[in-house]
Image 1 (cartoon, rainbow, N blue to C red):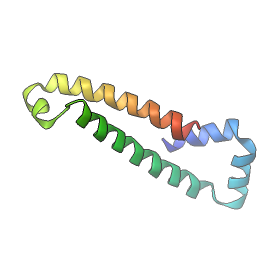
Image 2: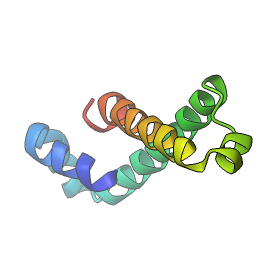
Image 3: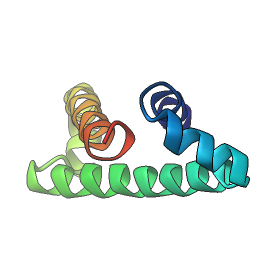
Length: 88
């Protein structure tokens, strides 16, 4: 996720990017955003899986259904994180 954010701020927020780069804070900033984005992603996946009944029991009994639902859920979580954190 960090690479996408780096590219985004480099292209769309040039002054902000330049200030971080010159001050030596770019890597720390990107690491912080990446950590926050990863935490947000896992919280969203966990919360939605619980809400939608995507359980370990489903995983054991209907593994292909579980995989499909989890893939859709992860895609949705990625879009939310990208919209709210990476490209905000």
